[in-house]
Image (cartoon, rainbow, N blue to C red):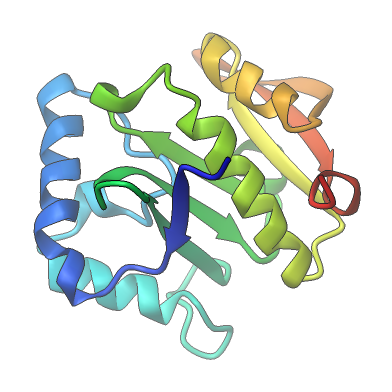
Length: 179
């Protein structure tokens, strides 16, 4: 049973995105998969960057084309998470970031939303002709590792990134998205 849907953000999501950002700031947590929401001056600047980064001809310098989605709970319309699909990988993403980055707000964790978000994102990867998706997480983030494994992730290796270790998992998109 699908409990959430992934939608592209629009101006009508301004307040929900602001609440999402505040919850992460309150807990001092990283907003992964949000297209730089933590550093955006305002919602309009962030939304313009999200829209620009959708296409090769307008992607911001130093970035790859990417789709950023809001994970909206179907029954009440609440923003529970965000997920970004990078359409291709540069050197940094190949080592540390992967094709997909995501976050779930603290008040909605441990409810299975991350697993469902990743499953829906993998379906979108199929549309983007991504046959194998690289998904990474911090070795200390056991919940994220379980989410990736629950979607068919296979650990390739671990990469030392200074004070943290990044785990690199590959997911076969064609197999996973036919579930």
